[in-house]
Length: 263
Image (tube, rainbow, N blue to C red; front, side, top):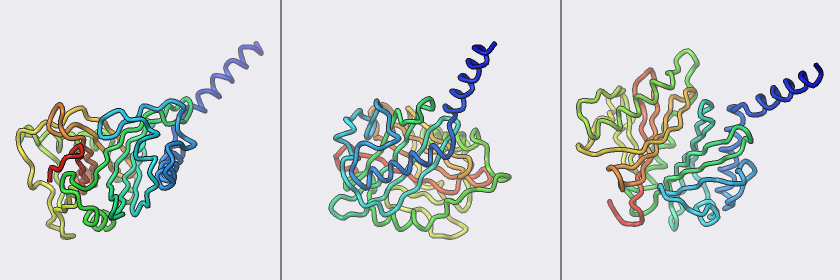
């Protein structure tokens, strides 16, 4: 009887300790921010074994971007409790080494440690890269929490991001465009801070966006999608979307050109 009770208690303790929480994920993104500022490829919430990629390629984390101390001029993070995952956006305006970086982190909720990190890193020569413009517009946008009664379901948020991605290859797809809506692409911005701002401009045709990987945060109405832009072998890409009332409000995009200018 006692042995059975202790066994049940142990199982309950294990279940509680493995629960993914917003606080756990917020600690992870805070650790990442501090590590990047310090130039440390190790931080307290990082697992002993981590699957790590930069621009969709496996990289030794000790030789990656985290090994460079960076002064981060703007940052924002989102948290996905369902997947036990998080997302961070960093803007670095250092004229010698400017960067815009997005990172998805996945946490093993049995250890509360990061088991996977994937970053898209853009700098001079990458698609429409202009870090001054990126900082200017990103710092003026309003990405605040959405009241619970107005939050979209995660399925709606994901579907909106997928619809945007699908229309690049299928113009019949219906995208929940909002108005106003503003797209920050590299340092280029479709908005002017006006009620008439639109995102449904300059969208190419016949382009496949594949191998999608998601982080969704219902509280902020966001989904970040990392993918290959242009099909197999395409550009490493991150598209982040914010929905308000079921409609697209903001889109942030960055694409790495693999060290070759594609501007």
